[in-house]
Image (cartoon, rainbow, N blue to C red):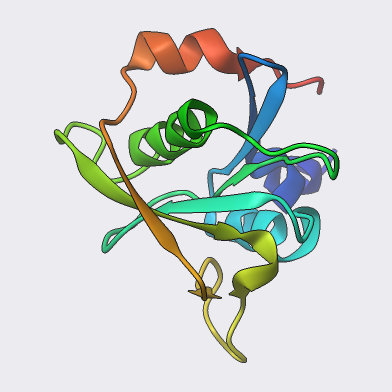
Length: 140
């Protein structure tokens, strides 16, 4: 049996459930980041990434009839900080924009995107126990 399913971009995406039934998706590989940011994210979803260093692409699913409050946006940003090289840092800067403002430059390597209309949130990365409390176990 091939490990192709395990290597697919979909298998590199971790799901989280935040208070208020908000869903957060995190890419754990460059291919998963591409798939999440370019194919899976809907235009009105919010996209997060640590500023200035390697890290996961993080998408907060936003239903068309609602908008996340500041604490929900900050929690998603703190998950992005956790899934980055700044995991053990104090306060860090996390970029946030609507997914419609995320694009992939031609011939860019996997996981590379450009963003427009960003806002920056200052957050502390979550600790492992808190992240684990929001994690949704994979169904495969």
